[in-house]
Image (cartoon, rainbow, N blue to C red; front, side):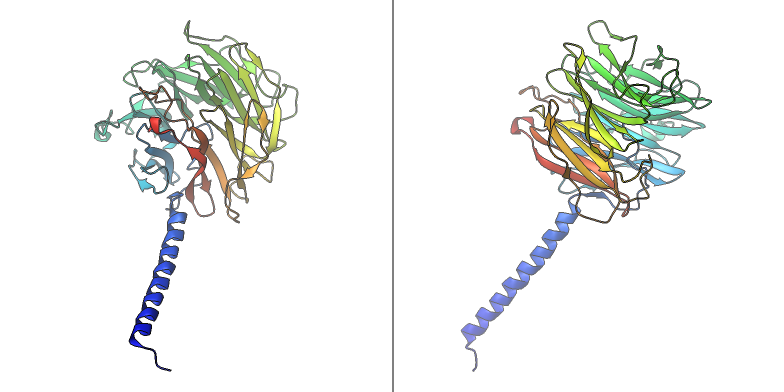
Length: 431
């Protein structure tokens, strides 16, 4: 039976519509894959090492910036990407340094929407460098062509300096910390601060002067709304070869750090090896701390209340390692971590997955797998956290979601960084 001209036209239209739907679906699926992949060009395994670095920053206009290590050892450099649509599409931004042993970038925004970046770079010996990007006029405080390793050196003492991180308090005071190799398998944490948004820095000083030090490293700051702070790090103590998690308190009123440190993790005599602490602060002056018990491959949590100066008990969250914390405006804490099947620090030769939990004041959800079901090795999760900048109209911290959280991790099999958002919303007044 011959089809009429009208029927033929209908068949052609139907076929065209079906083809259009098919190709639209293919394009959509392709975009869904791309929207989370920040970088695909053969990243090194340590592009997000170490865990104490803050790799993500969000500004008041909603733009996310991400800084990471790129290149092949020893020709590593600091690279960056950004997104204008809350992570749907990422674009390569700028290379910050030359290719000479540059590692461990950490970024923090201030209340004026400037980005402050710190990293370790080689200058005969390994030193700590700083630079600032003014997002209003699009300029760097230190021009690349004029800089030594493209930044201002803020670690000036003897010895190699490693693994810096940074935070900012409510007075716009920048705090930077790193560890120094003293030789003889001994390390100490050194810090400096700036009261003029990175224009000048104090001479570096020690944060652990009360201890007979063996090893101190991997430190991290957090500050509350009153600019009181907590400094949490990995360290050993006289008479013990085991690593424990330790804390010092900063009192803004008299601008001093406590003379004595506090042991956060399991007792000193416990046969364990506890490292990679993460700390955040809520709006009720509670400091939330997580860490990895490497010897037993467990992730732990504890909370410290600044007002009454007391700790909650220690809670085992799950098997796993490399925890990283975030918090939303409802004071819900999020912990993202990798599932580590073996008891080793370096998990880049195994098949790990990314999980997260959430809770308020010690009541936690069951573990949720944040990564897709895949045979790839997924490591080094890094949650986004910062209390600043603050919206001048609403008084709300722009960097902290109303609900949910975002994080990145490294797909070590495919050598790419992946961005994930878990039920995240931002208040319109914060945009």
